[in-house]
Length: 256
Ligand SMILES: Nc1ncnc2c1ncn2[C@@H]1O[C@H](COP(=O)(O)OP(=O)(O)O)[C@@H](O)[C@H]1O
Ligand SMILES: [Mg+2]
Image 1 (cartoon, protein in one colour):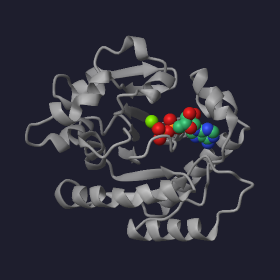
Image 2: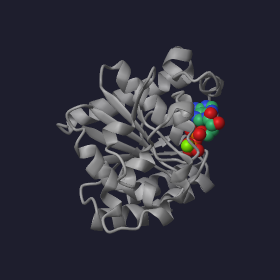
Image 3: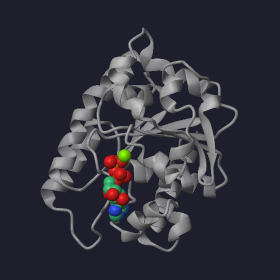
């Protein structure tokens, strides 16, 4: 099983949207996918339409009160270990030694059941994001093509570095994904340079695919569908499908 964390400590950059769309796209390609929602806001959980039926959440898994399998909910959009409001207190409630490894341990028992785990994370660099980075083989960083959004990414570097040093030496940044992209605008020279510098610092690349701004995204989330079900011909569906092609091609090239 390959676990992929979707991270960025900035909110509103398209983490939850990308987590859902990447997972849904991989399912369409025939892969078995487990979604894990580590954000107390529960946007991914909401779209997967299970908010009312969560008995055990991902937080119960992290705190060790249940086995991960007990937390898995089967939804029409895929399997999910769901969010709960208690995730908001994880930085104070998860204290014991080894707290960074909880998700990694939980997922290791599922290796034969799923091809991918897609982990949505909160807009912070606390213990939940560290758990996601420790558990994954690689992370994807959604960002927007503006200076403020890109400045935030370089702060991620410190967190990634610490996780590599102490918890997950093999951690790779799979790529930076430009989201909510205005296809008609040209990226200015300053922004283009900053993207290049940021990618270099993180020893990663910018995905060639850019996900365009697309109203169908918001509409699909309102009716709790994936973009592929709701508007398969929309720009966002085309772009996320192309991102998945890019990811799978790269895996093949790397022999993964
Ligand atoms: N490609 C897109 N086109 C239009 N709206 C988008 C797109 N991607 C995300 N959004 C919207 O932007 C907002 C923030 O996205 P979200 O995925 O929740 O970000 P995050 O999880 O990083 O906070 C949401 O309202 C979402 O519907
Ligand atoms: Mg989110």
